Image (tube, rainbow, N blue to C red):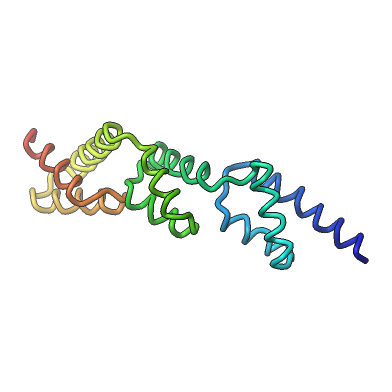
Length: 159
């Protein structure tokens, strides 16, 4: 019996290696996946250790890639990125390092572009409604209120 259990664990390890190789994963996601394969806590911990040792799993690398990806593709702000990483149980230190991946110049340029685009898309509504809708949009994307206000102020000075 011991041999078939070992074979099952090895099969799970091969499966989880592919899962991790396909895209970066958080420790939490991998742990959940291992439990979904029917493994016990000690087996899950053992396989997690092996994945880390063999560099299939690296939470810092995951967090940095996640932050760059969500900012670059979805134009998320730092608040939303931080929130989503916390949901994935990423450590505060790794979240802090991940957010450093987003340069301030790019961040502000993206924020200003999003603000200008939303402002233009709203069109002919009154000033207060436009301002409110643009602000809500930027907050929903995860940008800091003070930076969003500055971006809107920049647009309204041009208008």
